[in-house]
Image (tube, rainbow, N blue to C red):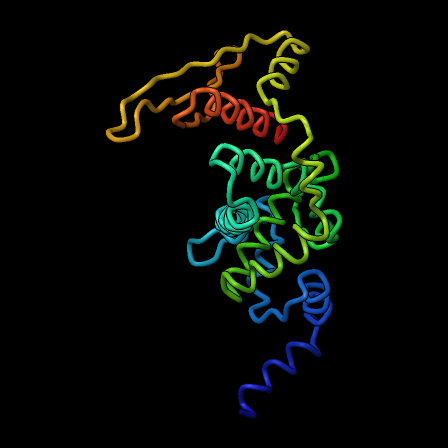
Length: 242
């Protein structure tokens, strides 16, 4: 027991105490592996090569994006038992969009922890703080597991910072938003789509947004309308990331 306590006491009283305390204040959880959180706040511009591995937050961001989507999806599934998949997908997209993640990161003060290696003339992309937020989710999942991470997301984020009623009433017509953007910037917009027959399910549509010959990541759905909206949302998110 003594051998197990010594590293913990040393860790809390050493130079990492500030990070540990800040993380506990932010998440309401007692983290264990601080190295994960240091990596979560390491921007790709600060790449550190170690044993042929790049040390930054991009992998944790990838994981955090998936975990956050799963937690929000589970929460909405239980909260709205009579709503269809299209409703749940759109509401989840509103919650985890880049703008919301950026604002949440700033509310939690993650901008004070993000480490970069950019010169003064280089501008940090607007998505960097939202990416760090997702990386934090990934770190929490690896450190404490799904249930503890869910506790943070639901209690500290959804219940305190997300107004579901406002989101439900907000403009979710991503096609119109994208059309306005393209008209304003004199860009040609088109939607390319293909369909396939899914046995037992019917027609499935894959829609790609193409803006002035540039194709964006597509989205597949059994509803062509939903696929178009989601494809437009994906394109807008990439445009906003710069």
